Amino acid sequence: MGSKTGGLSIRGVRTWLEGPGGNAAEQGGRFKALRGAAAWVTTPLLPDDYLHLANPLWSARELRGRIVDVRTETADSATLVIQPGWGFDFGFRPGQYIGIGLLVDGRWHWRSYSLTCPPDWTTPRRGGKRLISIAVKAMPEGFLSSHLVNGVPVGTIVRLAAPQGGFVLPNPLPEKVLFLTAGSGITPVMSMLRAMDRRGQFTDVVHIHSARTADDVMFGTELSRLRERNPSFRTHLHLTADHGKFVPGDLDAELPDWRERSTWACGPAAMLDEIEHHWRGAGLSDQLCVERFEVERSAVGEGGRVTFGASGRTAEADGATSLLEAGESVGVQMPFGCRMGICQTCVVTLSSGHVRDLRNGDEHHQGDKVQTCISAAAGDCTLDV
Ligand SMILES: Cc1cc2nc3c(=O)[nH]c(=O)nc-3n(C[C@H](O)[C@H](O)[C@H](O)COP(=O)(O)OP(=O)(O)OC[C@H]3O[C@@H](n4cnc5c(N)ncnc54)[C@H](O)[C@@H]3O)c2cc1C
Ligand code: FES
Image (tube, rainbow, N blue to C red):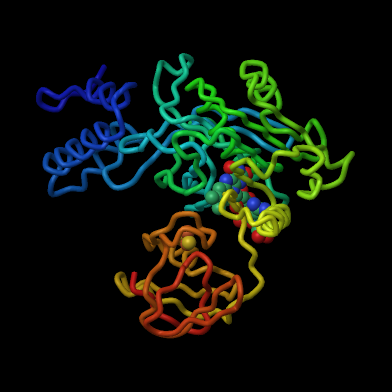
């Protein structure tokens, strides 16, 4: 039976909020109005306490989602289908990524994952509710990716950070497109391909994807179906166990018109370095868009006590732990986006002390703006957050 508050049926409100249709702006307006109402009705207690009782996906403070399906893609990768709660922007651009936070052993762990679904994705199997999907490849010794691929139960409530990122297609689409991907780097391109397919908007698109063997190809069956449905879409699988690593220099023979194509590339750092070098050499850097999943950390800080000025909380951090992770470990709400030194969302002011950039060892001093996701303490320091 649906519970009632005055004339307000919880089930009715839930259907209204979670129902299909409506654009992101409308959803955002609904969310804000309801959040305001919830705060008013539940004052002086926190609205979240009541909302959580009604539905764990409802929160006035943060974006949440429920994992509703986990599908195996390959031996070491899986697609996770998530039903977001209030306030999620389903109008994201294909190629963008989200932050996902999981509570493991009493601590929230955050990582970034590219969305693999098209915007406003629904499936009849889930009653027309709007969903999102990500696909995760378990990294050897990777903490969260292994958990997401091999252990996370359906029904788990996760925290979400809003979609963002500049690895997106322009509108209208270029006449000639090249996607170069390897391994899990196929994920943002999958969202782009699915969106093109759904809108019936395939231009002349070539996708060259590297994987170790045919069994390691994520979305292999779907790529074949997309190709059958869209004659202007061509794929080439580069199996590295048979042919060695993909070399950009081979493009002259394999795809003679590669210079005429707008190119999006995503994969391991070494492959992306080579591609960037090759495009630069051809004077075509402005035709290349690259998405990196990892950051090269070649330095360590000295470690020290990090004080978070606004809350007065402190964390003892070693020289390999980022200031972002240090803050999260003691419950400080740190701003973040990519967690890889790309987006600048995590920048805060260093109020005192020194920190070190983990990418190159550069030291920052009092008054500097620092990226907390790729900086570690170099002695005791205080952050203005
Ligand atoms: C914008 C963005 C989008 C991303 N999208 C996806 C996606 O769609 N699918 C996906 O599977 N992953 C994606 N990632 C990578 C993801 O965020 C995690 O970094 C990855 O899943 C590893 O997390 P972990 O907790 O298992 O590894 P950790 O426990 O954090 O790290 C374990 C070890 O692996 C190394 N490592 C971490 N990540 C990588 C990596 N990508 N390549 C090589 N070594 C690494 C670390 O340096 C460390 O030594 C994305 C990253 C970014 C920044
Ligand atoms: S979170 Fe993106 S640069 Fe730090």
